[in-house]
Length: 392
Ligand SMILES: *Cc1c(COP(=O)(O)O)cnc(C)c1O
Image 1 (cartoon, rainbow, N blue to C red):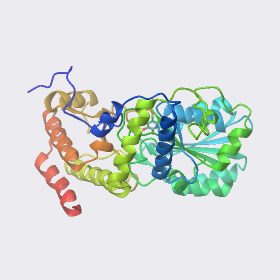
Image 2 (cartoon, protein in one colour):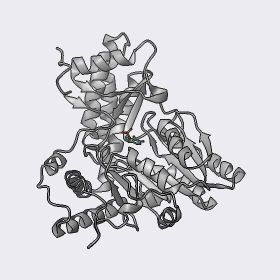
Image 3 (cartoon, rainbow, N blue to C red):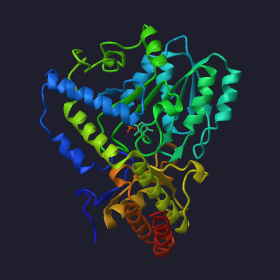
């Protein structure tokens, strides 16, 4: 049997775009009102307050109208000025990539690297800050999606706060899928989006901004204003009587609203547990197949994406096409350091259910055997089922 290439896959377990919750898709088809009409302004404000509750913020969150790369670039442009010394924490492509934006706004950019299969050590950050007292801004990526590794941002945040610097966090692929919030890691600017673990289409950035970060941005003469990159323009957008800087993405805001309702309705703890259980189920099967995950330790393996190292002699392209053609399963290849060396199976939003992990393990075992890597689908499924049965 073959699934035609031009047909959508039966099951998509990619780390963004993710399969979207049906309720969210339905919300995209709601009426699109005029954004300066008073009822819409009130509704926008209610959604911002709901988001504040979901992000567990004491300050008002901000919604920017572009997928979260916009938020990351806007954070660099708004917060960093020529006087800053910036420390980039890099354990993968996203952490490292932030350095490109930081260098546009400051000439003093230092980097602290960790190997791409490991997590950043908060003690190494503390040592770096001690050696370089001028460091005023630090950036970190929480979940390096290309590597499936989680950095300990709460501990890093404590070290950065102790030093008195401001922390920019990329939590795009972790927020909503695990227990992480801007104030838990004392972020100055926490960048995330609803299109990964909250299960919307890619369109928006969600920002948590501390009071100190607002003060620094307002004092920064080069922080963008009158620009799509501006954070300052959106400070009080939608509050009673305040104008939006430009037309809001009304349909996508409706989708966000539905996604927040689903998240609160299921209960954040239950949502995180569902992501965690799916990842553990999948990892148990992977290990039994005789494969290993990219992360050097399970201690920092991501609950929202599992990156599986390819065994000797198995090509990424062959495996991906066999999975898709034979079973209709779409997963991602590696990226950056994992390109050509791993496949990525996401457990995000609607895909975060153990049944999807079981289906992916079956297909993976079938394709691997066909490509010449001997493994037992039955044993892998049994090991994976045991994780589910012990938990439920
Ligand atoms: C998905 C993702 C983003 C958003 O950027 P893309 O355009 O999808 O690459 C940012 N950071 C991380 C860690 C992500 O996983």
